[in-house]
Image (tube, rainbow over all chains, first blue to last red; front, side, top):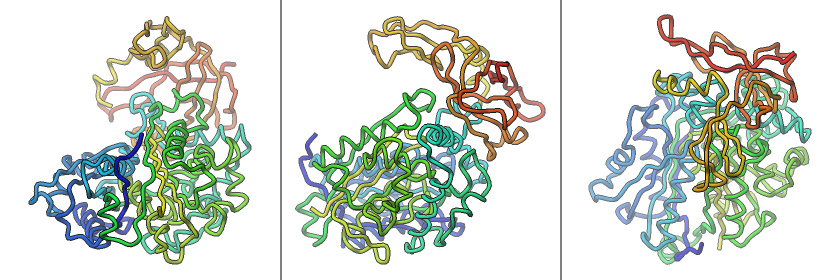
Amino acid sequence: MIAVEKVAIIGVGQSEFGELWDKGFREIVLKAGIEAIEDAGLEGKEIEAMYIGNMSGGRYLAQEHISALIADYSGLAELGTPSTRIEGADASGGLALRQAYLAVASGIHDIVIAAGAEKVTDVASEMTTDIMASSADREWEGFVGATIPALFALMAKLHFERYGTTSEDLAMVSVKNHKNGVLNPKAQFRREIRVEDVLNSPLVAEPLHLLDCAPLSDGASAVILANEKIAREYTDNPVFIRACTQASDYLAVQNRRDITTMESVRKASSLAYRMAKISPEDVDVVEIHDSFTIAEIMAYEDLGFVEKGKGAELIREGITELTGPLPVNPSGGLKACGHAIGATGIRQAVEITLQLRGMAGKRQVDCETGLSLNIGGTGATAVVTVYGVR
Amino acid sequence: MMLPRFWRKIKYRYDIVGTVCETCGSKYYPPRNFCPICRRKSKMKEVNFGDKGEVVSYTVVHDTPEEYRMMKPYIVALIKLDGGPTITSQVVCDESEIHIGMRVKKAFRKYFEDGEDGIIYYGTKFVPES
């Protein structure tokens, strides 16, 4: 797999993430899109195609045809610009990024926009839980009451039993991400928490507590991708996408070979390392899909940063702290930033871009190579992206 | 879940009926039309995987979907059936009793109902073997 064109991110934008009661879906998407266009120094009409990650406009907003809606309100329908909505549960954003990447890498398009958006607070929270449950197998998991947190709890429980990971280890992931979130002006939760706060928060599905779970949030994000030649015309600090890979696993957790391993993450990341011609040790900064704290621990292992079963050591030893040798989730991650479902994969790309440009403000880390991992549901879809300053 | 969608799978829910691939011997629950290992060479046959197994992992669910509100908290487990495949199911026992490696057997139980006048959804749950 060789890209015909080198692909660069030349503009990034993000709305606030959170409970945005006073803002509608159209407004938050526009905010992120306009910010990205301004950041790239474009007029807007140069954009040749649009890809939008959105998990469930149909159930959150009773609105399908999200692609047309956004083309319309962004003014691109006037020009007839093609617009496509992409769905892969909470990996929708990552998938949109990958489709945009493929369009530019193949030479078909010179400049495109990838966005992600979700508006979740227009429905009641029980409804939100039910909608999220549809990212697992409705007939054979959802039916027996296996919610998404319950399925991650099954993974956590076996990880505890087999490898000695503890609730305190999981809590430390949440504590770290909250600490980073304080430094991110766009994060939903900008306050520190303590391990005891996590352990004393209500149980959602044992051993996962409320503060082990990322919130479900409103939000949108956007990035502009261009080939190298165009990127150089618009910016002096393009961030290159050196690989953007995707892999699948069985939808239902019960059908997977080992529930403490996300095969999709292993497959997507090993391919990404090969394509980018790097190894895990070359990565300087990471955004991981911490929809649940156990997912971040398992991802440390499945991304190859540490061997299987030893994920908790990275958090215990402070390796993945902002000041550690491998900062993970400098943005605050899904836990503190907020998890705006379809927007998350793009928001991760925004964060890594800011980090590699050296424009991440107080949460800036020293980095030249970044990686993001976006997963859908319980890991049936994974998208891994490798970014570099060259 | 809509009625027809539930009804057409009753056979597989009330008894643990799945499929086995006669080419490679792989066993699947829920049933599949196609073996992911043998692909075009797959030869699927329905089989009952019996009623006993062992808990691989479990969780006690406190934050429940709307239809399970009256039941909370309840136990969800992955159970490796003696017959081969792994199933996601509820286990009916005391919270202090459940553990990884626990032996369980199948029981026919109610899952939930569609309001006061709606149909009752039944299915397989598990109880301690002894």
